[in-house]
Length: 170
Image 1 (tube, rainbow, N blue to C red):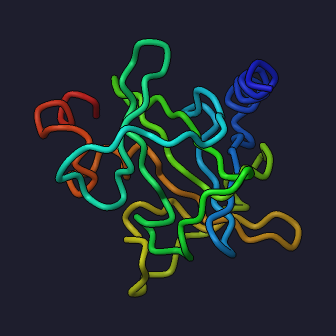
Image 2: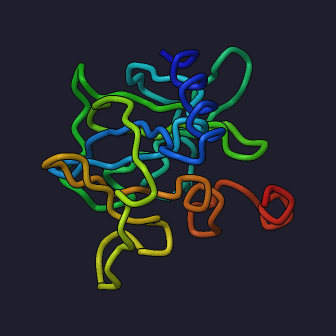
């Protein structure tokens, strides 16, 4: 799936047209993130907990020798109840020099959005800070919340990177 997605993304970039996104669900909402930030998709496994970590950081897993922090996006975005079912997945992301896993309810598909399909997010008080939202994508009858996942994961409130590393990754 990734090889096809990367080839399609390269074609889209060359033509200046659509960009590919991985879509996933959190509660009743559907979100989209840049497919090029996705390393792999895994089933949920109980991570090793870390003392004094924020509630949304479930812990860490050992992924082929790399220690990967696991962020539960349902807790971070305050969307629904965080229940772990056979459908719960972890999306492993490559963000700058970091590898981070995000827990979501389920992965929907890979979809292409052209720039004109993405509208600016309205500025309102919401559980998701709008500075992390690139916009709202429309695809037929679907509304996708397009998240700037790199900006979110590198933000200081995520506590995943120190400020020196954050400045270097931009």
